[in-house]
Length: 107
Image 1: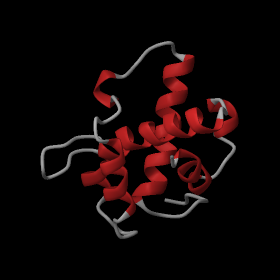
Image 2: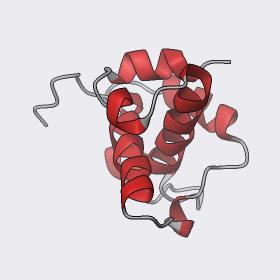
Image 3: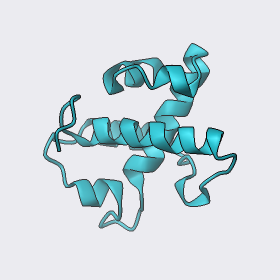
């Protein structure tokens, strides 16, 4: 609610991915349950194809197909890809919009 970047799972995923990567860098730890998916590109394509009103709980928490934290894990994947592709660190990356970060994550 009240997200200045708009609604939708892709935006939520990138915002949460920023938070996860920031926490891992500055809390000096990892969240094993939020590991990058092995098939991150596929998960990202799936999220990008969702309607703007897709079920937040299903995509960010527990999916009906058994996957969990799809949005968080895909967001982390996107942020890591964007950092790798752009050479921009997490603090500076957080000044960009989710759309810009998605574009930076593309190979």
